[in-house]
Amino acid sequence: MPVDNWIKLYDNSDPSQLSRTGKICKRVTKAFEDLEYNFIDVFGVTKEFVHMQSLRVDLEVMKCKQIYSGDFSAQIHIDLLEDEIESLGKSKENGKKLIKLIPWVEHEMGFKIDRKNTMVSDFYEMVNFILEKNKK
Image 1 (cartoon, one colour):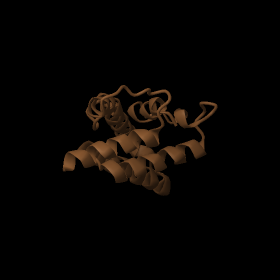
Image 2 (cartoon, helix red, strand yellow):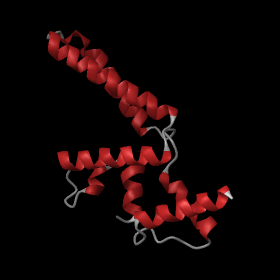
Image 3 (cartoon, one colour):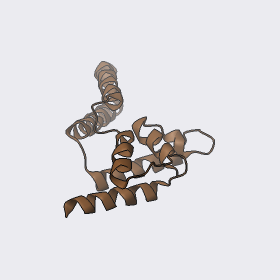
């Protein structure tokens, strides 16, 4: 996958970048979630991300209680939580944008990166090389 698509995928939270047709199905959603977990394993998480995940858990618990009890009076709370999660997901303060990594890598490596033709694996090899170099 080219770096340009990778950036669109993460910075815009657009899983359609993983689909040839641009449609989002269960397989694409699962692949996107797996990539998110992999990204977290490599780069860690922010406080905002942890908060958003906590809200997602609360939301799912509320939905399950609503279904189990048959009491739909909590629907307004569910709607509010969904809105809050959506706004947190779209917030620009949620961690660093991947697009900001490109100028840093270009500066450190001393050459311009062709985002359309550079593969993600090559890009992260450059990032890891720079990080290792800076540790010394």
